[in-house]
Image (tube, rainbow over all chains, first blue to last red; front, side, top):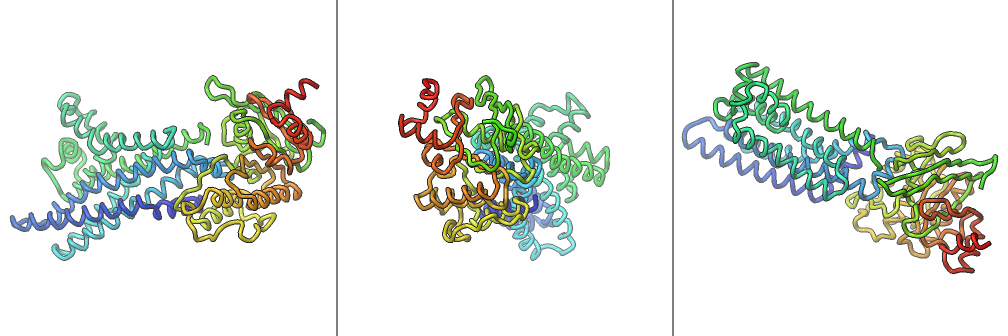
Length: 271
Length: 233
């Protein structure tokens, strides 16, 4: 499986999509950081928090979209092109194919995050105390796990789809629901007011992106309206460290569970 | 064809896609090291037969080679799918290196002739269809697989490529491999084959010496009519 994972990663990283995604995220992250630092300095506030929070929100949107889409297209594309059949006949099991695809897509998303956060760190390093950089590194770590979860979800979509087109549409839909749609539903319907504690916990469990974003914001010591009802509830019940731990556990579960389900689906269908 | 010395035994191989029966209980007994041409019209079930034998299609029935059920991953099967598209951004060296690793590091039965595969640094996406097919074929034939399943291996190849590919396939057969080659253009492969099976409507409609199949082609100028001639006889 190692050989296949290395092969898949090389194939993906040589492609235009990975480079374009990394470039776009780096540009957006750099620009956001500069603007964030500049605007908050004008009103006399320490700026690493707001600037970093802005990058977190960007990281929730761009690298996750890249990871879901490439994950879905990777597996569905290999099946459609006959490459998966070639590999399966040579002894690559469905689990190995799923994990190798996930790993290569995750590596591409991590490249994007690395370039984007790296550029942002360069900007921040010249403007804020070095003491703030460990927090920034922790944010980076959380976003790596979120990207890995997005890649796993993409691979699951690819395993279930019957064609590349269906996989692409499924990936876009999944990304929209997780990155934007669930938040809109939760806020728009006032679910928490009506359904209470159970709905809050469900909202955390079903959305790894929101969980990752909340964990990152808690690391930045954000509070009040920034956290939203879910974040405020978790801090109240578990304390900030407990909430971060729980949120990270949710994101980690979203790395493992989609891969397990994708493996089951891949094993039950023709290569 | 049956016999006590059968090396590849296939029983009741079947495949359905919903209501449609793509392969309908195919039985097969092949002796020794055989090069079997799998012929038939488009949609007859040739690719499905090979896919089931390769274990990449879920199916009914069983295939046994040398007394052991054929399973993907047992290191004995090499399979070239029809219309295979290798990843465009991979280099030739990447593909061959991966397939060599998957072949378990077994030494190749035969070295590839000089120039059969283009320079290893080139990307698959830069190659012509025929060059990409050569790379795929070279990769599939790596190591020493016991059961080689090739679905239209000569597609897109030029005359030289066809000659080399055919020679390679025969050499693997001579060295002990069981080789099944599917092709809609029957003459391509019948001239090199020992036996031929004609698949029609998912069934094994005819099985016999490849020479007889060629004679049938000469006489009737149509693979489809072999069965008719058999029936008439």
